[in-house]
Amino acid sequence: MASAAAEWEEAERKVLVARKAGFGLPTACPTCLPVLLYLRMSQVPFDVHVDSSFPDADHIPYVEFGECVAFNNEKGGVIEYLKEEKIVDLNSKNPSVSSSDVLSTRAMVLTWLSDALQYELWVVADGSIPHEIYFSDLPWPIGKILHWKKTRAVKQLLGITKLNATEKEDEIYQKANAAYDALSTRLGDQIFLFDNSPTDVDALFLGHALFVLNALPDTSVLRSCLQKHDNLVNFAEHLKVQLLEVDTSTTGLGSSTDPSSSSTPRKRASSGRGYKPKPRAKKERTEEQKTFRRRSKYFLVTQLVAVLVFLSLMGGVDSSELDDEDGVDYED
View 1 (cartoon, helix red, strand yellow):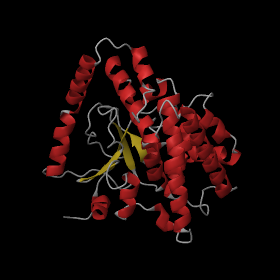
View 2: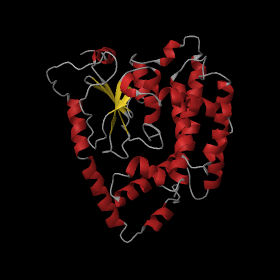
View 3: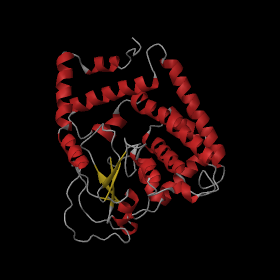
């Protein structure tokens, strides 16, 4: 069997499966956006396919190429997979950059800033932003239950209870401020964070910054923290123009296919250079693909059953009571 790197080179097209666009961004999902930006920085021709079938699934985003699929919830995520398999590795183009500096900066973005964004999105926000990103295609009751379920999960992840909510909020924003201070110092007046050449950290932070600046409301504390640093805001706005506000129909760098509720991208050729389709015999699906497609087929059914069971157990509970339940003490 060919290696993933060889499969990538032979693939006639690459497809990034992400959540739908919103807030002036090609994908409104804060997890999908850094992957799209990483591929754009790598100047890889690819298509973007919208998947709205799995509103709370953690395998999205994922990249399809040939017979291979790189899922978000496997091998450290899509970007890590592409690097480890020596498919697309921006960091390798910067041999003079200290790997320890890159690792520590990446860890700060993926912990302190990620936690702060999760907190604002699922705990502080009124629910309209997550609804637009994840649940707008679902019936209201199912979307409400999934939002409530995700809020509980985020509070558990961040260790938030009724007793420590205020202290945790202060801690979250203190760390976010410290991260922005460190990133602002690291960036200085450069174009990128490390030696004026992009790394995976640039893609990760750029995705975070663009989401904060474009999706979060003016009242957002996190947005205010970021806007204190003019060079970080300029970094995001400059690269947004360079990477997102381009004619993808001519470059092929992330051109979008029509949105579909199907989890299988349409087999349409990328408009990128050197990736024109050639007729070929249909390859037999692997066992992993068959298993994944069987699971995806029953995903919505199991979600519906879970909602029905929940409603039967919580009979008579209205939406205000669900909101009150968000503050439950998880240490009990």
